[in-house]
Length: 241
Ligand code: CA
Image (tube, rainbow, N blue to C red; front, side, top):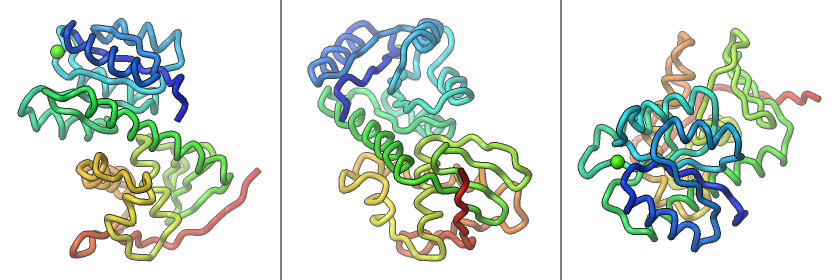
C-alpha cells in the first residue's frame, strides 16, 4: 500500500476528528481534516485525495448529500461514518455510492482497518486495469476495463462506484458460472473479506438496478440458493487500441 495516500476527513466533532487524524497519521497516511462540505470541495479541487471519510451528521449540508454530490463527479472511495443505530443512513449511504460505512462509536483500529480494506480494493482494481486493456461486451453493454467505464446498449456512459465496477468486472470475467459469495469476495479483495461482506449484497442490488433497468430481460445477475450468484449473459472480449 502506498503510505503517502491522502485522506480527507469531514467531521464537525473536534474530538472525533482529532482521534481520526492522529490514528491515521500514525499509520502513515496524510490526513486533511475539514468540518463541512464546502471545505471538502476546496480541498478536493486543490489536492489529489485518495479516500474521503464522511460524517453523516454535519451542520448545513449533511454527509449523505455530500456523498451524492461527490459521486456525481468522482469515483474517489468514500467511507461514511454514521450515528449510533441509524441503519437507514447506512443503507442510504451505500445506495448512493459510499464504499463502506462505519457506525459510531468506533475505535481507531477499526477505522484504520476499514480505510486499508477500501484502499486495497481500489488499488487492486487499478492493478487489474493495467493487466488488461480489454473491452468486454454483454447484451449490447460494453465494459471498458482499462478506462473503467460502462456503456449501455445506446452507447451512453453509465456511472458506477468503484465497488460496483469491480463486481461487474468479476461477473464479466466469470460469465455463466456459479460464483459462491466466498469466491466473489476472494476475487474482490483476497482473504480480508469481513469488512466488505456486509455491503456486497447492497452493492449487487444497486448494480442490478443500474444494468438491468434498460433491458427487457431483467435478470443478468441471478441469485443462487445458499448464497451465490450467476451472471447470465454471454460475454465476448473485444480488443481495442
Ligand atoms: Ca457530526
